[in-house]
Image (cartoon, rainbow, N blue to C red; front, side):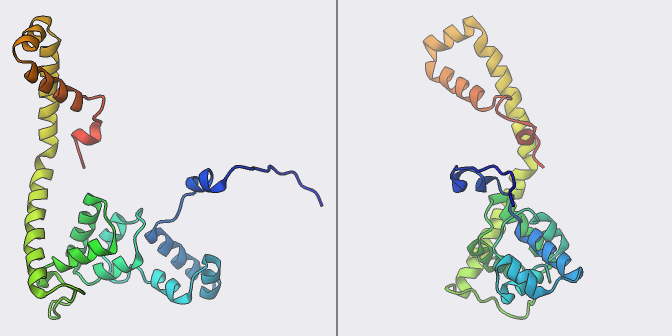
Length: 221
């Protein structure tokens, strides 16, 4: 039997593999659940995915005890499945806050999730009657982290609330400085009398150019 084919002698690891769209952790969970609901044997799924049954069971129950909002927030992220075990120890509202924190700093590591858990108030835990236990951390250290993270969250939200207006004002001021510096007389005067000020003006103009800052920077979600 013969068939037509194209033979590529390029290095796969440098070309095609980087264009592969890999499933996120949550999407993989949905895929496994859908296959099981359609009658595919779990052993067959595990074999096809090249994983042990214990790993399949973990992925199958990934979102058990997880807030729906968290699943939506993290649906496109590649995250260690154990991170969801950490989130599961928090109440739903705190889970959402934790997910938003991880997204804001683009850190979805297990260690960061444990740090958030350590800084979580006892009343925000799924089992508030049971004390937190984080390997390598004392109760005093966790209390300190709780206070520091609470302050950090307040500061972050304060900046987030005013960020759009601040950037808009900065861009408007930059436009004004740009027209000012474009004036030959003003430019000549600053260059002779206040060269350091001219340099600063030009730095601000360059850094806040509308060509470099898109709508997402001016009006963040």
